[in-house]
Image (cartoon, rainbow, N blue to C red; front, side):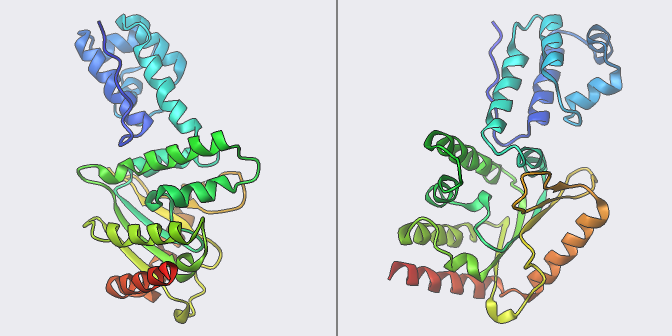
Length: 278
């Protein structure tokens, strides 16, 4: 009996599907050439699937299941992986793959704590106030957001260079208790050796980041970096345009240069947390 693999929140859909595809191909005694011929793919196309460089389709998963006699193992896996992604807003889904695979994330946030480092109460307050979102939808989206944070628990998580505007610390989200928990979480994650957290103070008079938040992801294997740009638009927010991503990376460097040191940033967070407690 073939045991269906469980989705791994640490890995992207493409990478996890590719790992399982290669595993079952080898267990079935198929070479890439033999399986490729059976499912009408070239060796290079199948190799790209197994290496996570090509997105699988449900129809392809069906063909592999049939050829290898797996029943619906790979189809079921792909459905579960896609179901997790479907709980996230449509405009965010293209970014999820890049975020999971990134080696370094350069983050600038002007208005709120980034999703990867939000506590549940903070995330629920933000998502629950979205127009037209039902309680059930809010629950699903909160769960999906917290599952995204699984990448931070990997043996080697992505390095994160996070800069928050001072206004993030003062903007009420949820309740004073929620804010206290969120700021306490920021203090705790700063102890992570893969995390750098700085605050850009109002006193810096910096205007470089006023147009909105963004993230630049450095990808593995020499692949070019990718950016996610915050916007009120529900359209495409992911950019792979080299010039645009390079400009955002430069802006992040300028913002970091104007920010407080890590030690000074922690002191500001502690002081602000005391105010929320009071």
